[in-house]
Length: 450
Ligand code: ADP
Ligand code: ASP
Ligand code: MG
Image (cartoon, rainbow, N blue to C red; front, side, top):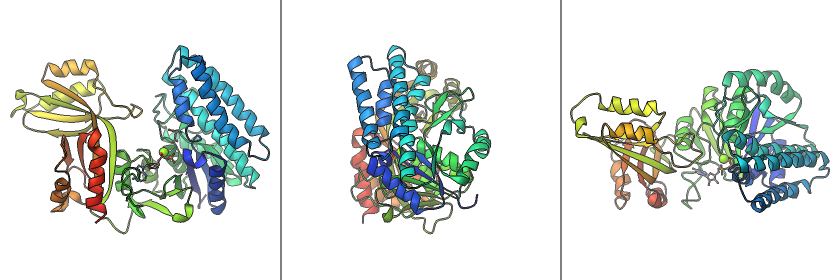
């Protein structure tokens, strides 16, 4: 299909009846939108995660279940004919109840994925019915029939080739006749077990599905009118960016800008699908276009923040003018499947941060066995409660003069590590978590507000 748009709506965009109605209006306004990917209603995934972690207290469990029922009931009650959607939602709530009981006895990643997936399964029943009632030829589709992943519960990896094949067999034909409403975040492995792509994963789902159906556009509808120069909750004068390149936006997502799941742009880039980010509350305000080619490539584009960083510092006099030391360090890290994110070295020490992938956002830790092996080689210091702030821009390592501006602004901060030079697009540094927001605020004023 040539003009084929995929629209993804995040949790706040489907939080209640009014919000869902705005999503429907956005779909109505673009006849090219054939596929809608929806998150769970705002707050629902957090409640389901709490249950999946195994709430022992029966009363607490039933309170959470009541909250879940209330969120969905409030929307169901405003539908003209809630019968079908309500019976599906209640039967999913029954599933949630029994899975929550099982989790209180023994929690597992597999069970968690099954449980948290119920959020998206419920919201899409309601959204489909709401769209039908507005006259949209909508049909609900269970994306687990297409979005094939491995069995890494909690952060499953998609099987792109399988997804494409399954999509062309089942999903694409349906999109020719209908507006298909489906779930973000969830998938299934080869055995049919429900999996999830990690928190915030609906963006990634939407991009994977857009790639599989060879869509010509992907819209990410959220609660802000585009990608801002930094998180507007941190810097009140942050401003939306009209156009940004894939490389810059990928760096932002990688360095923690919550607006996009870090992997979102990978499928879009593979298929050169332009991505639009806008606010479902105010679509008329426009948003950000992420494209291959952009008109301007400013030196400074944005600031991103990632908390919960773990820094490991390894020190040994043996490193002095010796060869093979770093190779040994990385051999040990690789053996224990420790993935490294940032790294800096000096004559006798090396500092690195641990990759957060697979930690569901918490601080990654250095496995004890890895630590013991490293200690045979050198001294090992592990520090937590750190944040990485990334300054995203263009041609940074080829430009002169701005380091003074950046580091002058940060003179009162204790920078623990600075990474610069490997990428044209970022300069990033590590500092105490308690100071990170303030560092962003100061940098934003200096680099983006003057
Ligand atoms: P959704 O539920 O729609 O996926 P998210 O809460 O995951 O929405 O992402 C949107 C939020 O991302 C915004 O409300 C904003 O606070 C945050 N955010 C972080 N960095 C940025 C940025 N650079 N530009 C815009 N929003 C950002
Ligand atoms: N509902 C999931 C979450 O809250 C996925 C998403 O919204 O992107 O993480
Ligand atoms: Mg999100």
